[in-house]
Image (cartoon, rainbow over the protein chains, first blue to last red):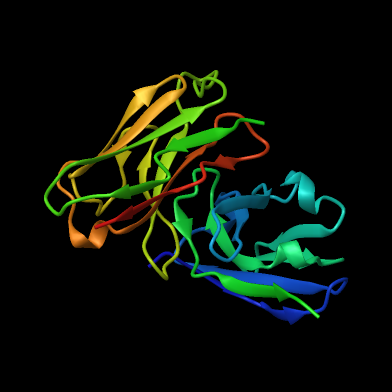
Amino acid sequence: EVQLVESGGGLVQPGGSLRLSCEASGFTFSSYWMNWVRQAPGKGLEWVANIKQDGSEKYYVDSVKGRFIISRDNAENSLYLQMNSLRAEDTAVYYCVRATSFAVWGQGTMVTVSS
Amino acid sequence: DVVMTQSPLSLSVTLGQPASISCRSSQSLVHNDGNTYLNWFQQRPGQSPRRLIYKVSNRDSGVPDRFSGSGSGTDFTLKISRVEAEDVGVYYCMQHTHWPPWTFGQGTKVEI
């Protein structure tokens, strides 16, 4: 069964850092681009970042450039999102999503930025 | 950036009746390879989004045939032929022809 399981969310103060993880199973992880997509409470979907199969290309939405870093470990079938200098507006559920066609989604992990 | 605009943003439907959601893009979604990369997603209350339709009109595995996608260029439509109670949720269109960024519509809330 194809599965994506996110972890690492929680409550963090403004200016703080958090590292999200996504563990993939049931498919050849190293063959796919991978994405992070977020959804603020009661709001729509926003693509955040993605990374090519070998990590050689990475893209970010403008609002997180310079603060967030996407990475992957193909040996561990894992995707990561290092989030620094967090702001209240980063509060959201963060989803791990397979491929640039967004075919498979994880269950999400909640990040709350608040003092 | 390509802006995706959905209408209506809210839709109240009657069980067994049809429903239609429109999605317009700020530029043509026809890729240089000839494909049009327009997806539709369903997000039921409390659940993760689920892809229903890819490349305008192709249903994903397990998606009931009452869901259909159509359109071309900048205008696209998701239709539900006969709405069922399990169809309640928010529907999003998304383009991945012109990137970055990958962009979603605002979402259309469907309620009975």
